[in-house]
Image 1 (spheres, rainbow over the protein chains, first blue to last red):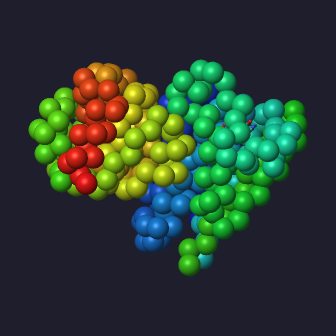
Image 2: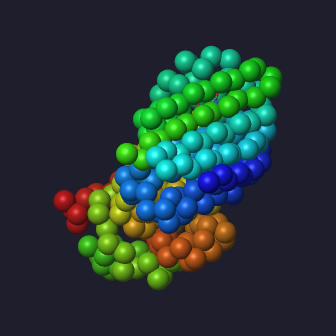
Length: 137
Length: 110
Ligand SMILES: Nc1ncnc2c1ncn2[C@@H]1O[C@H](COP(=O)(O)OP(=O)(O)OP(=O)(O)O)[C@@H](O)[C@H]1O
Ligand SMILES: [Mg+2]
């Protein structure tokens, strides 16, 4: 099953829409609540990053019998040092975004902790792609 | 403990999501950092925060939290309250600040 969503730069009001829809789908498919929780945390963080740090992008989700694959691809400034960005506490979030409670530098670590496979690729000045996989069993 | 008992005991104001007052509370998480809550709060938790925008509701819904308590008499944004009503996750407010609120909840839930 394939699903696609669009996320728009600065559109915090709709942050989490893709995650919420994927959550519903997985529940309907009777995927275990423990797995659904992990998928939701990881996808929400990737969605928010495309909204907060980039100029929006797309979320593509593929659900197979044994796993879910999520790809969040944005057009944006890219990440110059991915290893640094992965460190808990590292954030370049703007002051107005921090005021909303984002910018703890915990988003990428949350993704890492909750998925079975995480692959972040980025080109400065072009954009970032976050690929995540969670196995169902 | 149910959300409505917490409302009575702490004299909280129900801003929205009345249909969720029977939700069962299990534990509490106190944080104003959204990714911290996303990563660490558990289903059924009460969330104490001073954030009031719509992402608070998005997280409460995704994490299936019991309710949200806004401290220092904060008002939530209109769209936040609307979604809270739709999903039946109560938004509550208190005149207390975070320290007192958390302390009282700790006493009730420990
Ligand atoms: N899609 C992206 N485009 C550009 N930079 C990004 C992107 N995702 C992450 N980053 C960079 O990596 C940093 C760390 O990201 P991470 O999600 O861990 O924390 P954060 O978004 O800053 O804060 P939090 O997620 O805790 O609200 C960001 O501050 C930003 O510099
Ligand atoms: Mg983030």
